[in-house]
Amino acid sequence: MLDAPEMTALAAILPREMITDAARQEISAVRDEIIRSKGAMDVPTDLVQRAAKRALGLLAPSLRRVINATGVIIHTNLGRSPLAKEAVDAVVEAATGYSTLEYDVKSMARGSRHAHCEKLICALTGAEAAIAVNNNAAAVLMVLSEFAAGKEAVVSRGELVEIGGSFRIPDIMALSGAKMVEVGTTNKTHAYDYERAITPETAMLLKVHTSNYRLVGFTEAVSAREMRRIADQADEGRDARILVFEDLGSGALLPSKALGDNAEPTAGEALKLGCDLVSFSGDKLLGGPQAGIVIGSKKLIDRLKSNPLARAMRLDKMTLAALEATLRLYLDPERAREEIPTLKMLEAPAEKLRARAEELARKITAAMPECAADVDVVEEVSRAGGGSLPMYDIPTYAVRMRFRQGDAQSCEEHLVKHGAIPIVARIKHEAVLFDVRTLVRADEADDIAASLKAYFAPFADGNAKGKEDAR
Ligand SMILES: *Cc1c(COP(=O)(O)O)cnc(C)c1O
Image (cartoon, rainbow, N blue to C red; front, side, top):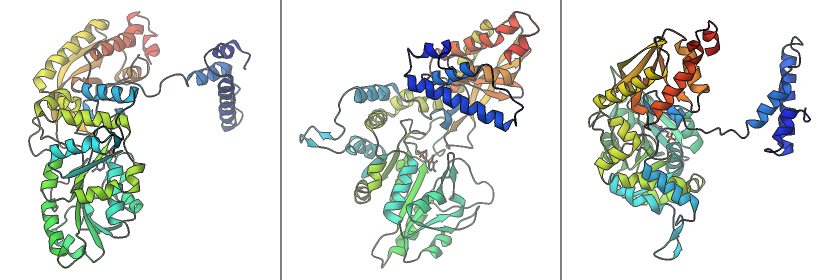
């Protein structure tokens, strides 16, 4: 195999051991296939080509840009929040040279990486102190480990959430060493449930934002303010104060204009309600890089800073640069709404989107053969995503394609797999929908049109095979 021309050609671009490994792996994969087929399968004639393709796979970038035409703004599978230009510039600056990551220019001595974002987070939330770590899951684990390990943490049965990607509150609590004390029922938890659950071993009342679902109907939950009052009552005569900690999930820094003030509590509001500590993500409604932020009193945050988990889960310089630049944009709320892509997409008025959808529809129509599909602009709903605002239908406009030639499924596959840039759209009632709300670059409309042009090309030849080719 190694002497085949396909393989020798690779020697110019890949080390020989890697080419050999690819051949071995392909042989092994084929052997397994043959065994599984119980001998019904022969050695494929294209074994060499398959090995060459496997070797070449090492050179192909795996983490690639995609075009998000789903209308889901904080799309976890597609990388959540795109960064503001200022944040990207800050990343490039921090990454291409040396930086003050842990160097204090004023004292000309070692500094703390925690210092870079703390003042901004405090200014924006009203908190006394703050720390940012790798993500909110890490933040929650760290808070539980520091303050509730070996003790009891009380949590409502209605808030034992699972967030996508295997973040489950009971599992995180178990990992932290905190003893989970469940109170209430799935739909109703009352103040007295917390009151009765408190024992001398209680270290914390935990509140978890039901990010990606809502309990509706016959329900009751206890507010953070009420929880603090319960903790205060129980505190009398105790040495250590019972902490109220809220995992806020998305943690907006600004109220949403488009969705109304009460759509999602801001991190600062949660703190003011009486929480001792609040944690939230950096890349959900905040619109920054992946991070988990904890805010609270200096005394509590100092304890987190010296917890070994803070070291294990610390942010790197690129993330810190992006987070700091994003937070700085918030100092001017209007500017934040204009320049932080997540906020801008969330706030984009439907009327403006209609014009963009019409523009995209024109480009698509011009790119494809006449009568291959019916293209129109329809009213649709976008979603905040990222476990935020699950009940909010955000009115939007989408381009709808109903197929006369080809079909929605094969077109969807073509858009993802066969273009220069994967394009993720939505399918609804046998039509492909492109929601323009989540298009982030002006040239993405052209990319969509170009990919559709390629999809319809086999049909344009007028041959009956077209449909099969497209598949
Ligand atoms: C999203 C979310 C998390 C996890 O945050 P990451 O930043 O993704 O680690 C934890 N808790 C809640 C309530 C969430 O919504």
